[in-house]
Amino acid sequence: MKNKIFHPYTTFTAIEKGFPNMVRGEGIYLFDDQGNRYVDIVSSWWACALGHGHPKVVKAIREQAEILQHSITGSLTHPKVLELAERLADLMPTPDRHSVFASDGCSAVEAALKIAIQYWYNTGRPEKCWIIGMDQGYHGDSLGALGAGFVDHFHKPFERAVTHHAKLPFPVPTADDPDGFPPSKAVIEQHADRLAAVIVEPLCLGSAGMKIYSAGYLKKLADCCAENNVLLIVDEVAMGFGRTGKRFAFNHADIDPDMVTVGKALTAGYMPLSACIVKDGIYDTFSDAPEDHTFYHGNTFAGHPIGCAAALAALEIYEAEDTVARAAGMAEKMKQWMQPLAELDCVKELRFLGMIGVVELKDSAQAQVAAIKQALFEQGYLLRPLGTVFYLMPPLVISDDELKAAVCALQQTIEDVCC
Image 1 (cartoon, rainbow, N blue to C red):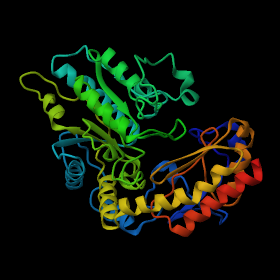
Image 2: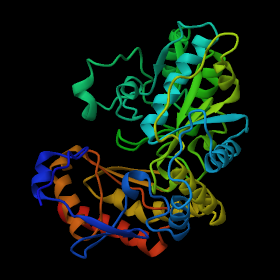
Image 3: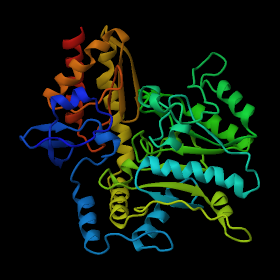
Image 4: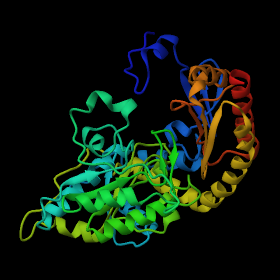
């Protein structure tokens, strides 16, 4: 059967070679229609934190599907969305929050950007309408999201369709400031009168090549935004729910963001659901009295009952199985097992953040990237390198033996192909 799919993030050259047809998932593995087994070492685009087929999540989805399949959250509620909104508020540093639900991370970000701009409109400061992010930051692929985040390699065709008022430079440590914050401070202070919000991926720019920065920078950024009357949006879609060794990446910096976007692992990747979690001080300005400041924005499947059931089950599992602490312990082992890779001549550097292990090859190894990826695929490992960056973001339920085997396979393959 001819493939009629317009594949995202996929070259036509790759399509011509054909793809495995995945028919089943179990634990950290995906299985194709030929009976081959693959380690989902990047958690299906960083989402499947509990692996595939976790019985408690599957059970929650099945039971909810028999009760209520879909009900909108425009002027209606249902039990699961009420419960989930309460749970998400309780996960924040302070529980005075309301959640706008959506179906994917980009949609949650879009809501956050519009909430930030309308908040200042509601409070009589309509000139504060700029949103800025970090250079090469990624917050989704809608045109709105591209105005805040922009990865050159992905988004070049759209550069004339979006506006970038300013960008925070990626932090570079100096002798005077090990967090590299002063250049960002200068940008915020220069544009504070126009800035509605700053949005950042916390501690790690994923699509830019897993570029990692310090918790100290994030803390200084939060303080600077507060001092300059600028909202801070933290995009936890990729990092949230234990990936970094804490429940959220922003917890490393001990900050309290104005808005937090979540998705992916919110449902353990089992259903499309996301949320923008908003402080009540912002939410309260959207009243329709004495003037109408209603938030006229939404998604058809926002707060989808089956998605909410999956999310509640996933949150329960993260708590019951102490996933955050387990991930933190596993991260130390992964770091230890990956250290020998630093000795290879073709390796530029290693980077780590919780259960993210990064191997960046030297530019001279660019020609070998495809061969390394293919060799690992033939061994049953599904990786999606970013330029010369190979990274491991496995399901948080991976065992010691499975993780160590993956690290060994990566090291041996790089040695065989490059060295």
